Image (cartoon, rainbow, N blue to C red; front, side, top):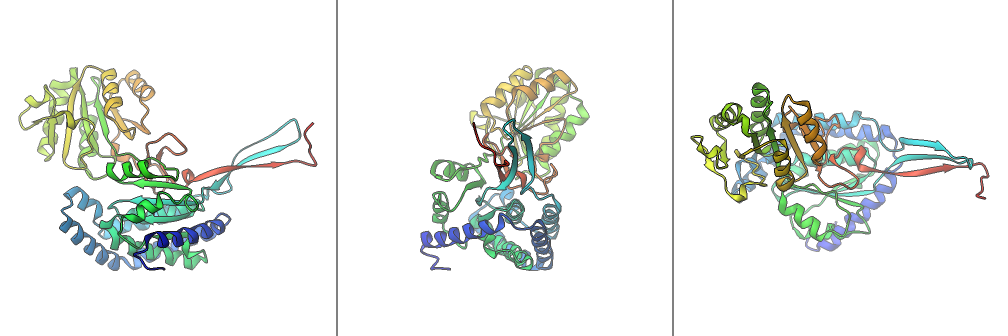
Length: 421
C-alpha cells in the first residue's frame, strides 16, 4: 500500500486491485464462495474478543465525539451482536448462488434460443456510517453475487470494521479466492469518499448507507451510478378500524425496540375517529415508555406531550422521539406520507381491507406494511440473510438489497448457423 496521505494514489491502487479481483470472481465456483463465507463466520466467532476490544476503542472515540445514545447503540458490539454477524454470514453462505441463474428463456421463429441470466455488477463501493456489522453484511452479499467490494466505513467504526474485515480476508484465503475481493479503505480521511464517487474506471455502483448528510453528498458528487438509500422517515397510520391490541403492539415495537435503525417509526398518524380511544392509549403508552411525543394541535392537549413544530414532520429522529398528528381519513394519511415521507417504509394498522388496498395502491414506498412492525424492514427478516441497505430509489434495486439485487443480467443467444433474412 502506498503512502496513506496520497489519497488518490491509495484509491487508484485499491480500485485496480478490485477490478482484477472482480474479473476472477465473476466465474468463481459457488462452493468456493460458500467456503469463504463459512470460514469468515468461524473467524469472526474465534476472534470475538479481539472484535469487542477494537469496538471499545471506537466507543471511546464516539463518546469523545459526542455521539447520541442512539448512534452509540448502532456502534456498539457485544457477544450477542457478534453472534448476529456470524449468523448473517452463515445465512448468506447457505443461499443459492444468484450468478448464472436463468431468469427466463424463450425460442424465436428465427431459430434462436435466448436466455437471460444473472451476472455480477462488477465492483461495488459501499460507503457507510457507524454500524460495523455492515462490513460483514456488505462483504458477504457482494461476494455471494460475484462482485468485488470496496468498503469505506464510518470514522466511528474504524477499528471494529478493521477487525471484522480481517476475518473476511481470512475466509477468502481459506477458499483460495482473491484477497482483493473485499477491501477496506485504510484511512478515516473523508477525501477517500470523494475519490470513490468519481472512480468511474473502477467502480460500477456506489451504495451509500447512512444519514441525510452522507446520502446527500453522494447524490450531489457521484459520477458513479448510485443505489439511493435515503433516510427512513417511517410512518404508521392508525385507521378508524384498527384493532387496539394490534395497534399497541405494532407502534411500541416499531418505535422502541431499537430507535437507531432505519425501520424505526418516526411519525404516528391517527384517524380522527380513533383519537379519543386508541389514540389516547397509544400516546400515553409511548410517554410511559419514555418516548417524547411531539403532537399536533389536537394531540398536544394530552398531558406529557410537547407541541410539534413544522420541522417535526419529515424528520428522522433515530431516538426516543416521535411526531404525531391527527388525520381525517386514509387519504389524508396518504397525502401526509407523500408530502413528508422518504419512500422507505410505511405502515397501516386496520381491519378494513379496502383501506389497506387503498394505502398499498396509492403509496409508492419501497416497503408498505399492514398490521406489522416497521422494524421488520430488514433484509434478514425478508429471508435474504442480510442486506446492504434499503434502497429507496426506483432504478434497479428497491427495498432490502440482498445478493440477488447485486446482480445484473446478460443475454445468451444460441443459433445453429442461423442468419437473418
